[in-house]
Image (cartoon, rainbow, N blue to C red; front, side):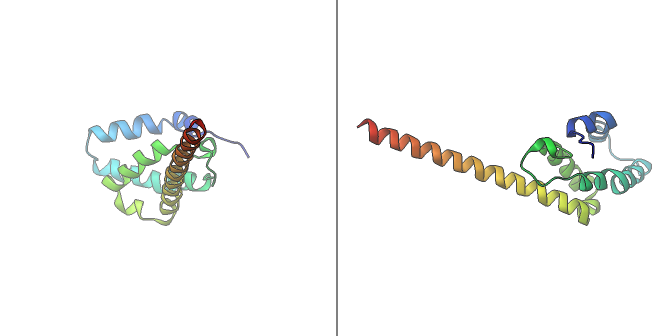
Length: 125
């Protein structure tokens, strides 16, 4: 199986530059909406869903966390019905759990730093 990095896929398809930038500036036309919805439902979301790797290593994810946040907010604003479908719901659950895991990891690191500072203070006195 070929490993495709998230940044390579987004650059290769031109999805990021064309999709997000042009849609934010102008409202969606009816034809654009239909074509976008069809491409999202039939190609892009299934591709992300099928290439999702359940690991903390971001290099193996089909999209980055920043791209997920942007994409999820776009779906919430413009295409809420697609956002509630099972495939995207699974992808969103994964990324939200990764955000929780990272926050927990950062909290644990902060606690560890506080404990080490307290130990250093005790040893120095």
